[in-house]
Length: 628
Image (cartoon, rainbow, N blue to C red; front, side, top):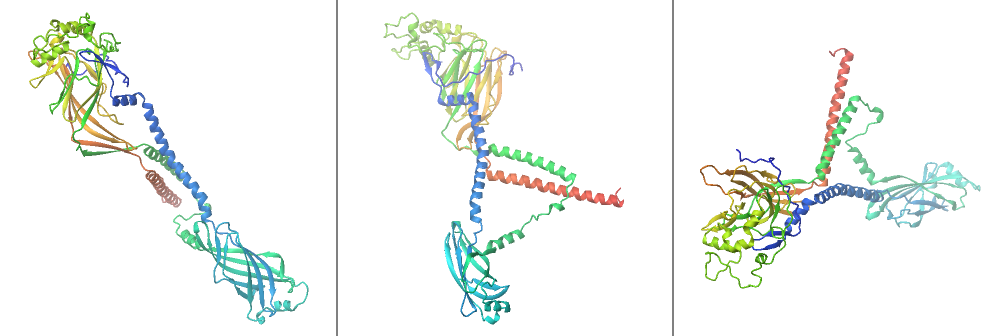
């Protein structure tokens, strides 16, 4: 079809640069200033400075990567600092033998000990039963009971042990002979052994049951010398903890017994499999890391139960062959609500034949505000404040006045008449209505802004002429413009239903169409899908997506001419889409990494075992000559 869209036949102007500043908007009676709504400024700022959003996203990814690692390192450091003191074995007591005395009965002995608790934290309690044994050349001479003692950290206790032998006849002959010897130096070697069950209380009131084995070896030079000088420091060994039994049981549960390296057999196939599995592990780890650093979007479909809401339509359309003075925007919906010749929050920018913006001129679109438009044409109203212009038959009452061309047009619309020749209207001649149209001939127009409509099915359209309502019929008056055809070639720079959200695709952005016939009507049929977007920070964006189909209707010979306009018909879907952006938790990431490493390691081990044993079988058969 000749009137199909031609996207590259000629160059349309680039979309305008949005700004949150002030723009001039044409109003029929005068010129006023309009400020775009703040939502437009936010959208523009997001498009003009995309690096801010991307840098914030990169910063969020870096924080998500480094914060868990830093937290894990901090936990490891804390455990390394705190656990060793908590799990460290208690220091054994320092025992010194100070005095040895032979009783007059000749079979009892008295020994004094100095016991010091060297632990800096906690206490130590020696429990019963504790026994001490006095021996001579591995022959037991006498026994004693060790008393119950409780020691705080750093304290010392003096203990006297009374050893009793059954009778002196049980002593070894050598020891009896030494006891009867009256020499000054005897050199009798003896030993003291004690088993001390002990309960220690360490940091955080952790209790442990410990058994210390104390062995003291000393020499008696003279039975009359009771004081041993210097003091004999006893050796403490054979430390036994209750935890040793637990550790031993845990050791028996080891499912990974270690093999001596001397028994390892390394093969070429094993090296190749190890290298390949390592590469696979690294690639899978990088893939999992990327998933962890980037947010995952979950999609959910629900029924849209909202009521009484409005729909915001943001648009930016360029008409390269239609002047701004001819172009109007109307909106209506199935509820019967109509917005004719919408001017609120709408910005028009004049374009030359090359698509460049035209600078403001004193009497055109883009000019400063003029308080009274009639004063610039002859100044006849400067001193006549009681002027009442004629409505040229459109008066509904005798005292009605029409002081501007637009008021005459409105009066005619109420009567259902068309303003066919503005040159016959004095107000239109003074305002230069037709002259302005002639001056703008060959120009284009860039119109952009936003509409706030009811959230029901409806349409909005761009068309030349002035629109009005007559007998419940929407009418466009084109007679006053004295033109036979209008070129509605256009380019849609941007069209959105609602606020921007990440990942949204607007199918009509940068779409253009060229008119090849004298008159045509271009129609877009849009299906709007309500959408809710929730980011990782919990912020919610209420917006919409849409799909579109299009149709063009051209005038045919012998048929009525179609209205030159661009229509956007929209309908709303009852299904709402919810996008929830969320990050994978660190525990989930750690679990997946462990699964990757463990799975690849296990599979590669099975493969290596299969190859190794297969090689052994083949080699054995080759040695026996059975392999062919």
